[in-house]
Image 1 (cartoon, rainbow, N blue to C red):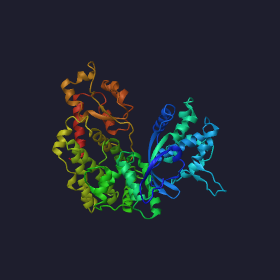
Image 2 (cartoon, one colour; image 1 turned 180 degrees about the vertical axis):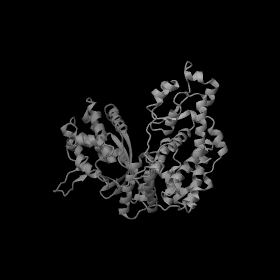
Image 3 (cartoon, rainbow, N blue to C red; image 1 turned 45 degrees about the vertical axis):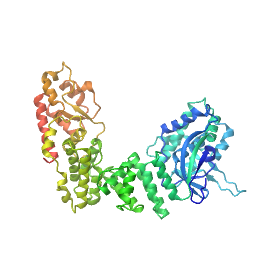
Image 4 (cartoon, helix red, strand yellow; image 1 turned 90 degrees about the vertical axis):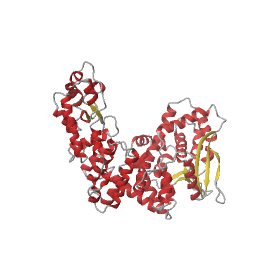
Length: 558
């Protein structure tokens, strides 16, 4: 695989030859994260081909390596390579595997020490500073019979979502293998393994310079292989670190951060981008960083980039994840927003404020940001205009010298006349409906106590489609139902999924059978329940509408 004179090498290898080489997964690479569906797809593909196409090649994919002396750093393709590595380990110990295959399978995993030939023992696939993963593989995967002897622990780890992310997925993969082959006793194990080692092929692309390898990594991502923006940004910035200790340290910190953020890491990096540029996103995340941040030198590559990301993550963990955050009123507000807002564009402005002013005025500021965002939506502002408004707030934060400077700024103003007109019309069915109702709940609840919400549904007190024989039809004319059903005063929140049959019950039955057990977490809904104990007619609805509008005016400072 070695390329010469800094050339890019490439070629085709069957899996048997792939596992005649040595690989290291660098510290800056992502965790092993293949899920059960991906494992089953892999096994099904092999099963579909191993007999009918026993003499044909099956293309599994490609992998990118940086050549090093007697080793290859695996930059891309580690998910497939790791899965194959685990497959050979599982098959070595599987009770249906013929004994004559076990030695050959072990050789694909591990080179035994040979004192006569001065050959050291060596594992085919190793992980660089992956915490306990390296030891896990050494103890539970490499020794012959180790999977069988540690099976109970492997199953427990596969089900433990607090376990190391790579270890959990490794164990889950082994469990998937056992389930798959136990359920298919008709599979010829020997032919199946022979097909994989001899007929399944991968394309390798190699470079001996890290710079070239990273460039290939980026190009392959542009060609549609599933590499995340986060992986590209991490790898390309690690390339700009000169101290190997920094590379290992930053890679480990990034891995821990990514394990927490999961699939949201690209979104988080977009928050960082927004905090730096304070402008609308116009292209993909990688181009935004490359062309609008790094090239204009708004942030230097390498250490400065990592310091900015890690600092922002610490802020995010404290005020959005609420880790070790004991500010109960603020925590309740964040839980309300995360549970009701469809967008998260408000988050960067809150992160930026905290980084500048810490807790001083943070609750009041966050309320103002969210009220402005919701008010703009109620006033019919476009998504682009709402994002522009949030960016203007961040500009004001950056310019402010004290919290009062920003809390009293004009950037929070909105068209109050249009707002009041629209809020008295039908509000149900808009994306702002749930956040608005949750803000009402927040203002009514006891915020000295931690409040959290699981299942939340919006309920019409006067049903949308009452039965023709119901009391609703007696109490409300058709014109009144058309006018009042979707008004904010007829809407409340409940802690369960909607049930149309119960929701259409007459008011007293509905209170007893539907509301009574599902509203304890909702202060405003409880107030309505207690304030109107016997009936809900046009008069009660109109009164609650007026009361609700007054509460909304207070929340939004009108």
